[in-house]
Amino acid sequence: MKKTFSININGVLFNIDEDAFEKLNDYLKTLKKHFKNTEGGDDIVNDIEARLAEILKSRILDLQHIVTINDVDFIIETLGQPFEIDDESETDSTKKSKKSFAKKRIFRDPDNQIFGGVASGLGTYFNIDFVIIRLIFILSILAGGVGIIVYLTLWILTPMATTTAEKIEMEGEKVDIKSIEKKVGEELESLKVRFQDFSNEAGDLLKKKKIDSANGINQFGQILYNIFRVFIRVLTLLIGIIFLVVGTALILTLAVTYLGLIPTIHFEEFSIGSLSLPSFLNNYIITTPYELILNVAIFLVLFIPVVGLIFNGIRLIFNFGRQKIFDISAIVLWFLATMVAFTLSVKTMEQFKTESKQIVINTLDSIQSDTLNLAVLNQQFYKDLKQESSNSIYLEDEEIMFSSKDSFYGNSGLTFSRADGENFELLIRKSAKGENTTEAKERIERIKTHYVIKGNSLEIDPYYTLVLNEKWRCQEVTFEIKVPEGKTLFIDKKTRNYFQWHYWYQSKRKMSGKYWLMTENGLEETMTN
Image (tube, rainbow, N blue to C red; front, side, top):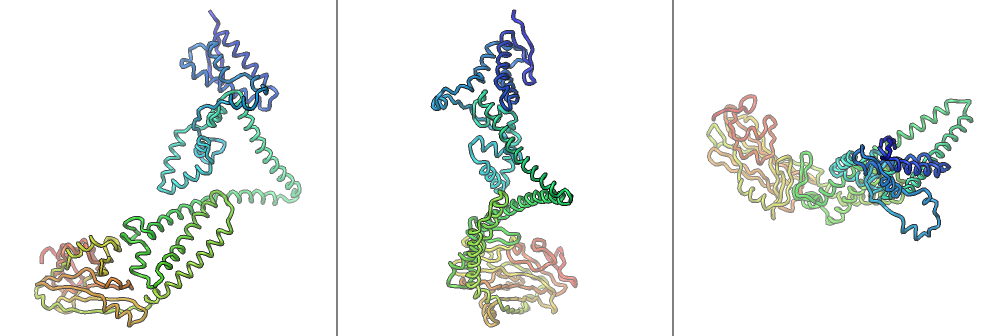
């Protein structure tokens, strides 16, 4: 029966028979002798032993199993013999044909990592520049934060390439003596370069210290300067990320608002439905025969700063140099676009210069009841009309403007107050702006409002009407219902779906569908009429 031995290879115990032990021992002695005078030889042998242990563990699932000479032959065949490295008799074509590659494995790359080495590991696996992978992660983070989840998931699931063999597998090469020697040599060369750079910097600092030895303040100042440089780099990186995030958000907003990419655009308390910014300006605001030129100029005024913000964010993150030609061209183009937009908008801005107001008082003496029923006029008409209309503007949940084929409709305001006399009253307040008072008054006269009285009910049209080509110049209409003290107002439930509410004491949702008694303190809810 053959003798067996227990040997420790790279911290792992193996049981090995006598023949296998002698052959493996001779192989390791040959390796140590071969790499004895090689720079980094001990590291090379240690990495080869680590790889040897990995191969044995993969072949021997049961640690009580005895390593045989067949296992050792497999190891030597896989790793190769030292003399194969020195064989230089082969031609280049023969070497190329014999060069073997292993299947690539994904690892996190510790040598080129910034955070977890995920991007550099993926770049090595797919043979793509690390910067491109990092840029893809940054863009995916900005587009909803998906990149953060993907990056953290890969960070958790992907192992770090800690050993030389894993680094070789990450690059897709076969792990043998040649590749291990090559990898260790590359790492040593990299360390040399870094050490040389450090030595040069240390030498420069030492020379400076000798020169300034009479004054220790200069040395302290140099340390502060280096700390300041690091602080500035971190600060520029943070600013770059902020610029990139804000710029991306603005470019998306610009695309949505200017190009009308989605049906409804929501702001904090304002939204435009199915209406791009150029359409909104052309239909409701600007007065110029050069609408196309003005829209292009406005687009450039908004677009250029946003692109500049994104470009400078990327420049600060990756420490790119400034492009003076790009910067100067963008500034000149933006200045010209601003001048064109301002010049073509002067006529429009002048039409907002003067405001005029009108108040019409209507005494509702035909209503003899102590209760006035308030309802909405033409509800079905507006319901059908809104389904056909595509251009509309919303304020909160109120549709304040929309247009049909032949008319422009603006939502009227509604409020309540106490009457001085015994009769209900309806005040209609109108206002508009113009280039002068006469023009503003003419605009008020073109505002059409409607209401009807049916028995004890007052039905008010919730929208005032303008002709379609009438531009918006702050036209406003507010209906004020004055209720005598001691009398009651019933507000139909449908009113909450229309009017802009100007009665600040109660919300329209609370007041709709209820009876309200006028007291000396204002309207108070009452259970009956």
